[in-house]
Image 1 (cartoon, rainbow, N blue to C red):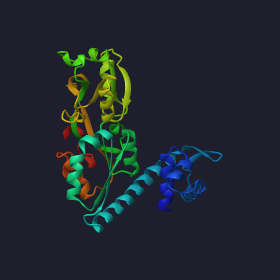
Image 2: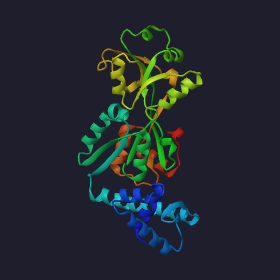
Image 3: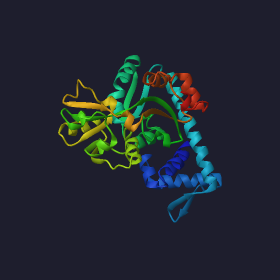
Image 4: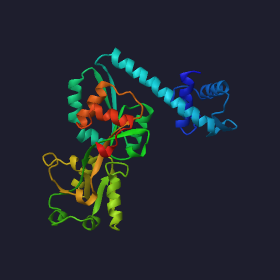
Length: 313
């Protein structure tokens, strides 16, 4: 039995039994993956994958147990490697943070600057994507830390650490009639064309639910993943914008005015996600605490052990 064979098993299962896709990710050939899986099944004396001809169609009952154990073995092997790299490398290493545009653009710059100043020999990379991509990158080991608002709580394999809460605001060009209203309502917003986030990003689900509860259908004429894109089209007069409050800066966003909308859409929670069972290196603890000071090493360790939940943080 070889670790590589276990990697092939787990990757094929992760790719929905698509051997070609797994082989591409593993930088090897499809016949090679199939052969190694067969050899492992022969050694174990059990069939892991059900087949129809050459096509994999399912996972057998013993196969589910084998895959669960294989996943744990591979994770512990990765943990051993991380421990070795941490202590052999001293204060050097690498850290990959997967996050959304909003977090990378507005929440992380000061944190990144402090981290780089404190750990100049650590190679820090930011990978931007959708919340789903961020979670998948973290689960696969392509990223060490996930930071997002949406979707992360849908992955039980991730330990969730709440960082901070934030609200939305409505932005409009100076002189827009909505700015003269004494109290902004969902009904008044529904009368105007709206520009806001793509459904997968930045609390869009809360925006949708607020209108649904009120029995209203918002006229969303444009959706984007980038608050700067939203502000650009609002400046052109194409509609009112709904963005994260952190994305509006009156000094920078000249010609635009913001109206607080937290009471309309509720608060959103940005979370850090860590893969369960992963060894966390010292500088990772430091990055997490720089981003969310309440998430000390003790709190993170308790969460990773499952002895604390987000409501206690």
